[in-house]
Each structure stands twice: as C-alpha cells, then as structure tokens.
Image (cartoon, rainbow, N blue to C red):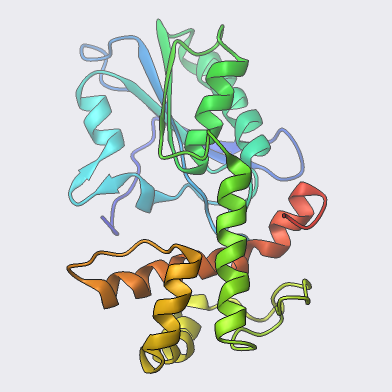
Amino acid sequence: MADYQLDCTWDGVQKRNSFPSKYCIIIPDEPLYNGRLVIWAHGFQDAGTDVEIPIDQLCYDDICTPDLLTAMGFAFATNSYSKTGLAVLQGVDDILDLVDIFISKQGVPEKIYIVGASEGGLITTLLTEGYPDDFDAGLALCGPIGDFPYQINYLGDARATFEYFFPSQIPGFGIFNRIGIPDDFVDWDTYFDDTIKPLLLSNLGKTQQWVSVAKLPYDNQNPIETILLSAKDVLRYAVLNLRDAAITLGGFPL
C-alpha cells in the first residue's frame, strides 16, 4: 500500500559508520508479545535512491508484514541498510547492529528469526550460516544464494545482447564502453516508456530474437506486456546500478 506508514515503537539512525542506516522496531502490546523477534531483510534498491526503509516491500495488496507479525505476537524490526545499490555486506553488518539495538531497548528475545527476499534473501543466508548463535532460524525468499555470478552474468548478458540488436539506444554504455551511465541520467522509467518501449514494439522481430537470446521470462498468454516488463526490469540494473556494482565489488562485474 503506497500510503502505509510504519508505527514504530522505536526508530532512529544506526551510526556504525559515516553512512548511517535507518531502523524501525515494533513491539506488540505486552499481553500479546510472545517474546520472539522477526527481522526483515529487504531486497535490492536502485543505487542513488535515498537511504530509506523500502515501505513498498512490506506490503502485498492490503496485507503488510509488520501488522501481520505483530498481530501474531511477534516483535518486528527492519532497517534501510547504510547504502542503496549492491549492499550485501553492509546489510549483514547493519542487521547485526539492529539486533544489538533491539536487545539494548527490549532485552534479549526468546528467539530471533531473520527473513529476507531477493538481496535480503542472500543477506538472510549469510547471517544464518555465519552467525548461528545469533539467529534461531532464517527464511530466504528468492535470493541469489546458489550462484550469485549466474545472476550477474544474466543481467550483463541481457544488456550486452540488447546493445547488439539495438545499438546506442541507451546513452553511455556500449558493448566495449564500460563507463556506465551519465550522472544526470536517472529517470529510467520515463526513458524506457518514451524511448525503449516504442523501439521494442516497432521492431518485434528483433525484440523476439533478443528475448530468446537473453532468455527473458514472459507469459505466453500475455507476451507483449510481460516481455516489456521483463525488458524494463532487466535493463534497469545496468542503467542505474552498474557503476555502483563496479565500485562496491572493486572492479567491473563479469
């Protein structure tokens, strides 16, 4: 729900380093609280966006995870991580710090569970494997936990093959030009709708070849709309997040 607001018992800024993470802790009313904590590790956020808790990842239709869990008696906690873009290591450190903050305010919970999706699923896996004394259970949802390079290669292959079929349609990034996207190129949604979408629709033969080569998912019952959705999502990573990934990983991601 776009208008959903977190009703935090405690919130604030984690000041572990010069790039703070924002957090929210919610405690159910005392008669309901079961003494157990669920921490939500959020998924990927585009590089360059504000460091904020992604509210849009907490709700599906009119069901919001914090409300559902606290109604069942669980305490709930989440944070923003200290950076956007690729933030796996930062997410691990920030959530460990969030556990310490919770304990300092509420005491040691009976159980601590960690749940995460996408990038948060990878963070969840790293936390449960690396800190078994801190977390009693973890649930990783659609996280790149089996082969992270496979996902990086999939995104890169989609971008490189798009350049082959539709050269020079996205500024600042050719097959052999790895400088990334110009700093002032930030509105991917508008650019896709105004430039890339008409290009794909007016060249359906090339689009179908690209979709086949890049192995983009789509629904046979609704191919055009779902191909456009896949194209918009898979290209946005290279457009908005390539430079951040190269800086974070210490080199160009291959």
